[in-house]
Image (tube, rainbow, N blue to C red):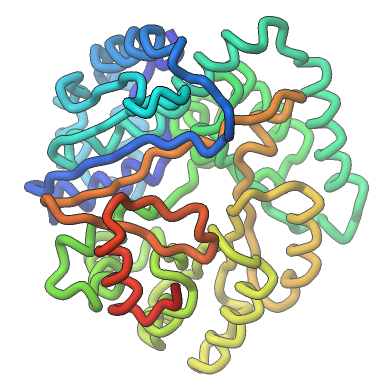
Length: 391
């Protein structure tokens, strides 16, 4: 089966799940799947995906996996104890052909946030691997290795890139589990200190690399329904995060309401409290320039802060960003699809996004409009008005 461990997911799922356990244990959510590729027919694979999901829902955390999580300084003992009892429940997830009859499929996750938060990453990995093993009968691993070696050489051949730090963020978009692990092992062996680690907790444990991650969009989206007032939901999300982690895991996500709204809320207090911010939509060069200026305007030395770039990165773009900002701030990079699904076939652009929390619509209004996902136009209009976002 494709997923054989509940640890085969991204670290930020656990960091967010711990916040949910401690602060929002009664929250109820809904997630929906979307494939952004035109003309991709996923309906022939519904039964195969369903079989994989049934297996996923039989898995439990192994004792050595729990002990590994317990070793993290920011993971609390009661959370690991909870995970020791945790099991995904198939009643919270459905997969079926879309009523649109256009090749799309509907994957809907509904249930308590605490018991559904771990579905997203393994489900996306399952859809990817099922699709590619049916459509690419003979994967060109030789070409994949050639491309990977070429990317690595872009770094190792240039002395001015000696301090660059690259992480793998590719679990959800990977070609396959075995290829994902080969990529990580190759990067760790050939890039050395330039390879910062991986978002995948299982592979971090298995391959002896650093697991990385903080928060994702769903956390700040849920705060739209969980906070005291919609306009304060972003501030509320940051404050609850700081309450849980007390200065640890200090990279703030900057594009749930667009960067303008982020900068309005990310005041001097948050500038000093958080270690940095993560870019995930919009022009990365403009984002970096504006964030550095924002730190300076708030009397914070940007060289003490980290700018994390993670939006559709390629190696040439990453190098260009590094050379632009390396002497003005700490910079780090998370690369997904371009690392774990670059064998010559067109990757799937698939997502699972939270669309409701406690019965209320939730959404993100990122700086790349195509990334927005909400089925309630009235709510999107209201959200834009509240956060002063131009349509």
